[in-house]
Length: 370
Image (tube, rainbow, N blue to C red; front, side, top):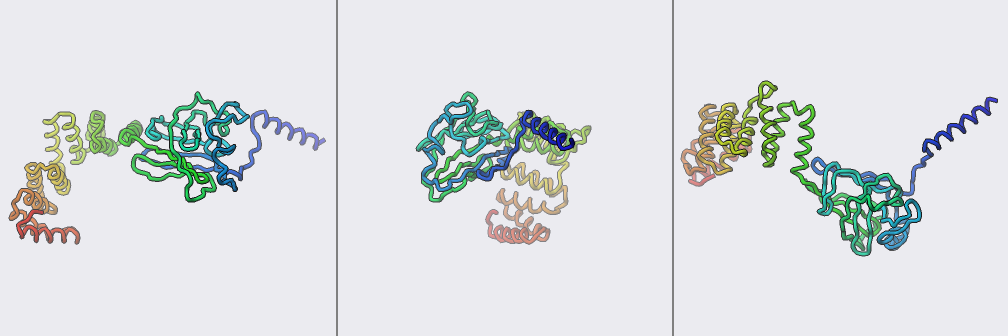
């Protein structure tokens, strides 16, 4: 009686599993399941695919039943003409965490089934909404989001036994992906709008807890200044970052960012007042760096004022003599520049700086500019 009950229970469990759609899954050791990806700035790219092997079929892959040219009715599923699944088994998928372009054409952020309409010399890359299908047996053309042409490379000098997706030529705003199999390679380029992509990521972060952190608010506003964008929102961020009621600090860096944003928005008087307040809170090194910035912008009178203020305020301490040396040289007063160069030499903080000053002294003694 006990044995009959156990068998009955087992049959019920098996029947329950089939009724719920569960079935035994044995790992496929024929086609390797692969996941690969890259990150460009804040954009994450992931490719999930199964990799078939050539298995002695060299020269018999493309334009055959393995990879038919164009569309072919596969005889199962939707029984509709279907492209190549660009892999094996389940549909190959590509996902992008932000909007991108594929070979110059826009593709919204998301996860897509990836197919290829292969031909003899050029092919078409297809991105489709149905990511759950098996291969391309259930392909529905109306779910295609993007078709983009590509020209494949053929007769490569090496045999790629296992199909693989390779990432190459990465920059800060693009990366090349190629499907390589047998002696063919299908390339595509993924590119991002770097500035807008990073800005949207910053906005997303600032909408969370760090949107209350003065240092993060300052960093966000500083990024906008450095990238010449989004000034109105950046002003709100830096206003909060410097508000003592919110825990903000009116540091030189924060106030100088605030000044630059105000100037970009056309508030010149307020920007000037803010920069004066910033210099009052600056360290000797911060004033020195600000003077160097003004020199790089060819604003020599303003730079002289900053270097002179630094020298007086900090009583000739490092690096104020080095600053005076630079500005006097730039203004053509090599005698005064030499005086400050000699005063700066014993203040040098490291051997490299000491050697630079020694060279500067020799140059100035010859009546030449730095």
